Image (cartoon, rainbow, N blue to C red; front, side, top):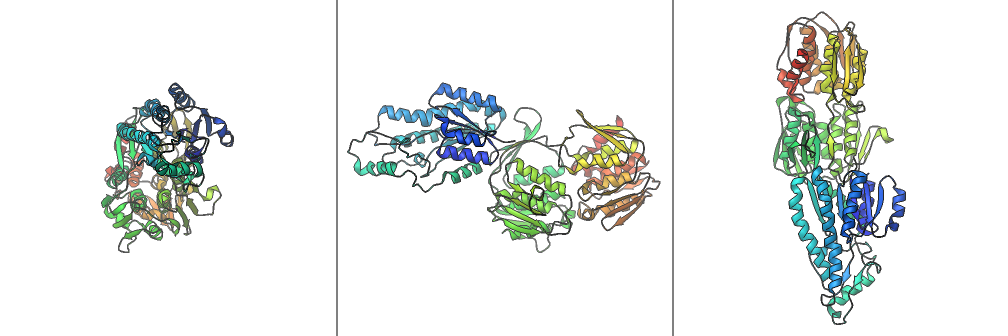
Length: 629
């Protein structure tokens, strides 16, 4: 979702530069100016993103009407930029009351009115940003700029108080204090001057000459300043609605908190539904991160830790020591990070964060996990040079997870080039830049729906999974295709996905390389089918929470099944099964696989079903509730 910017003084200078930068990042801009003709070309070039609005910010009644109009057009204002202004030169004795009042109207009373007008909307939404364009003159005055600096001092004093007042409502206030930039501020048509009394030549004369002769010669580039403004606003809070509360997500939240990120749990900004407010902050060490056995935490966060100021140690469950991290470790080292892992290529390890990372091109072998690629892409916008990740291995499992990563990066404003968008095969590029705080609703985890869909297939019953998305990059969406081929039928309705079993279960030959996480559940159903199944493309599952191929083979065979492990998967020949203990190896997918078999085979006991808390802590109650219905 793109942001809506309301920018005053948008026809030139910083206002125009910020407007252009916002449009380039995919946002919508309403540019206000006293004379909108200067915006005609900009509007024509970006008709879907830019509107011009005639406004004199010293007309306080017009200010309220303008804000109401923008909210009516777009539903909200995410960023207000108070940029309208002009310079004025003259000694204090030379400056008249009328000149001083005009400057205060423009630089103080106008911005104050705009702030008052937008705050009710921002408070209601629980988010927003106000950018107050001040000046280095707001910190230090010089001869000839006394009146001008007085207004900027006033603006900054008001804004500093404002920032504290609105912080609890998720609203950020940014004061920008530029020095000499090529903004046409000294243009003869824009600068004003008091009548020269001729008595301040020695103190104010140089300032008058600078204003008269210096326009266009300033060192500063407004476009670069605009990029910095967008980067500063990228640290604004974001909302995650309907988060999955599981061991893995709580470990992730805890790790981020340990490194300095604020995460507040409560209701959303509109007062309904659970939501987490994520408040970016400076990343810091020393810190210790418990990854549990979560691949996302152990792989996605070392690149984040490389951006922290200080060391961050990663440790976890005993099984986490056996899971490969070499792709992330080697990649980060090539990009300039310092990591101590005693040469293991695995946990435990320490990332010595230096506050920044160079980034650039890097080649890795991600054959054992697509998370190696995703890990480097997710933090790449904060790397000095971004990143170019090149996968050098023969295979790349779970490609949909990389597509999910790319979609998420693009949703928060990152520029990403991918093989699917015309780039090189097996190469992903992320441009450095600002990321945006968003209000995101988390899709339900479709992989977690697998045991419930399988229940309908195994029993010949019917289940409805609410809120199944019509379009998604989640690998779990392939369950519709796979379980239909195995004997069921499905329909996407206004209530969700309705899946119905036919009473028959058919074997299947299927390549699961892109959806390997679904293998345990599919194997469980295949063990109950009327014909053999061959599951391929999942050799990488040997390195998951447990060696899933070995575990499935052992557990199904001990119940009377006939499963053979192949080089890259399983061959399953259905046999009559009997009761027994189905061991989970502390693997949530193994637990749900055993539950599926238990629907059709009497006397199956699931050892440590509580391991489902890794991704679905309510599984035992949900399962019992489904069977009760």
